[in-house]
Amino acid sequence: MARQVWLNEAVWPAGEAERAAVGRLDLADPAARGVAALYLSPDAWCPPADGAPGIDMPRSLVGLAADINRERHAMARAEAALGPAAGVSDPTGAAVAAQYEANPYPRWGWVQAPPGGRKGSGAGPGAGPGAGRRRLARIAGRAAAPADDWTKGPLRIVVAGCGTGQEAVQAALAYAPDARLLAFDFSRASLRYAAMKARQHGLKAIRFRQADILDLPHFEPPFDRPADLIECIGVLHHMADPFAGWRILLDRLRPGGLMYVGLYSATARRGLTALREKLAGAGIDPADPDAIRAVRARILARPEDHFERALAESADFYTLSEVRDLLFHAHETPLTLEAIGEFLEGEGLDFRHMDVRPHIAEAFAESPDGGPGDAAARDLRAWAAFERDNPDTFDGMYLFWVRKPG
Image (cartoon, rainbow, N blue to C red; front, side, top):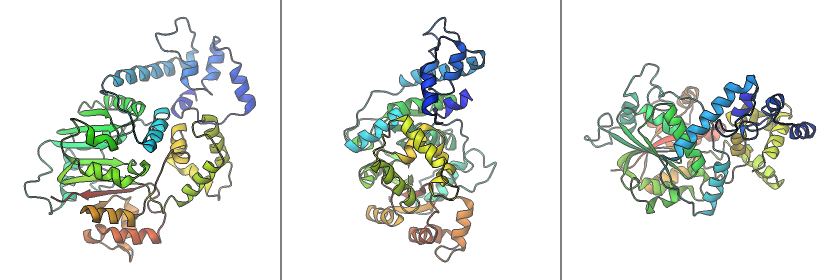
């Protein structure tokens, strides 16, 4: 149970009497230390391996304490590989960066290279090495220049707003072995976690750097060479002007290059947006862990048929950082497919593919809004019509591919 508390960042609520009792514990007593591990973060009960000689650890916690200290050591090593520190000049970006500095998101374990390269590929098991690159070639389509062979030579990939590194690690695995990958984020704490996870996966080809999308025009190498592929998942909607950030990234993409984008749907998140506005109006401090725990407990106490109770089905409901991201984010601007379509048209971008779960792809192919075949699947207006009839379709995110002309 103490290990689960560590993994979920002590997200479980505790009553006032419990908290008061924990506050009175004498942590010099091994038994008391064992109780504290069920309520408190490791900083309170687990000293550094070399920093507190003579501290007795309950036998049941020895293995967990060793894992915690291994992670601390790995994070410290990761810091040395991140390059120079970089600030955030934009007020909205600074607020978002502060959130992720306090609560890196998400915590995660291990990933494998998805069959076919990325989510929703449909390539099936056993796709084998190079499947990700072959999929890039299919997505780029015949509009790509004949010499533009996605299956050969090194790929230059940028993961913009990489957070804790899950997307960067997935990309490195999907497009290995000959891919040169740069992942950046403005949260140093998130980058430390990302670099640690890359090392755990045995990946040496990812370079992690601290940077803000808005400041990229002022950066020297390695940001000054165009990329073949840019991935930006769950990032742009946290900017004051998502489309301004998107344009900056497009300037770093070569002609004919691909971009994989993830954006929150205003339609699918309509109920969540209303709840977040209600919580913001209640004056709850989003940086207060006890306040987050209390709100989470109230949601769990709702009747099963209440909208808020459905949030318990979200994958973002089971660690403290994830609940903060879900309910108390510093800034979020969900978008519509109509607004995205206007941007793509204005920038001359070619919408190539919408990544959805298989049952959604089947429903779209059978619907009057969509239809079978690639032509319908590459029609963003058809997807917008489908979403109007099925408003919860993109309850995770819009995940789609676009191609830059050239």
